[in-house]
Length: 83
Image 1 (cartoon, helix red, strand yellow):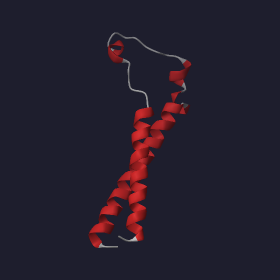
Image 2: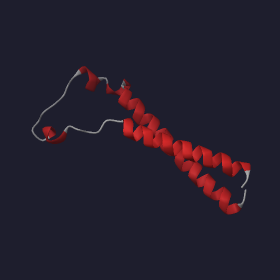
Image 3: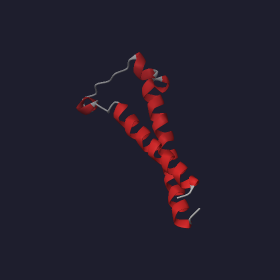
């Protein structure tokens, strides 16, 4: 196994663990049936959601997914072609 394969495998494992942790840390959508009845939460938190911790976690999750996908494809190609 070449150094490139080892490096890509380490990046792949770290990205996968990061994704798992970020998925578990995020809050779920627990609005439930209140949406049907017209219940609304127009608080300061909901208005400033773009700058909140939850939005940053979503962004970091997307970055981790992209890194995981790219590293998985590159790892497969490096093993298949013997780079």
